[in-house]
Image (cartoon, rainbow, N blue to C red):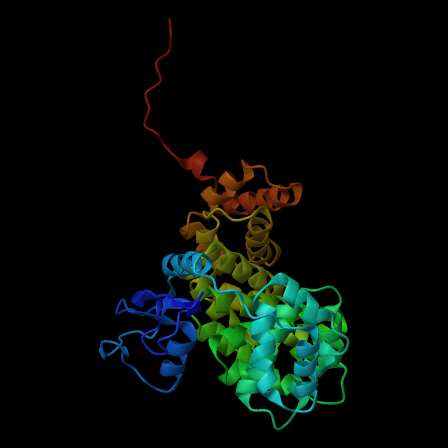
Length: 400
């Protein structure tokens, strides 16, 4: 890296041991060694089961984001920033023309340019024909997965701009060419970052009932999303898949298919894991609520040995008011509405009544309070009023 004809020294621990480049998304293995996410993901995806730096056999291939190191790199990068070369609007236009003519070497240039600033992102998104040209690559049968990954990362980057999301929806769902196959391929074989981008795109274009149905009915898509949900340990990946599933799970057919494919068991496992952030917990509860109103859904929730208990356990966390309402609604649905004895027993064993009473003392909504009252009635009747049967053995002294 050069500035004013002087070399800038890059701290060695900022470099990925695999790529030797400055890490963009540092993650740590169980060995304690930190790598750039894309590099270590490629290493593991190639079937390796060792730590590249130490060559130790990995007892677990899970990795966790190293946020402290990422902040240090960001601070260093800002203080050592090299002014980006000035790129003219004509040059950007030429890149777009290259992509239209299937010269895909311009895609990484576009991605780097749009990623460098909000102003650049807004500029490329506003270019006439930019979104159709880039999104059109997804329908190109000859494009390799590396090219497709660049496309979804660019689209994910620019879809926050006004009107872009609607353009992408029309191009992917209403075109004569099959764009969803490319996204499905990335979800199956792409890098972690491109899988996140693909899930976010699907969530964003699921705007209306028709689009939600078109996406959910794409053959193989639900099973791939469910596989990702059950295999991912990174919270960013989990959150993107959960958000996507929440967005597209609207029809009874979709809910039934997900339930029969093991969604309830996967969500129960996620809710039972304590090291996920609250956002992952809240989205898991929201998705559980989404499928609880179909017969297969509430039956699977009641029959799973840990699901109901996990929901009760999470009620003690600092959930948002909407997430707390979702959790109570799930319990109300299986315990009060459907009067399932297994679910009632699971709540009772998990000290659910105590948590419900505590929730009623908070500033909860009228709807939550009503459901809590219904649940309290159920458990008090079932226990034949534990307060009435409790003998304190206290001797009462009659005053003179």
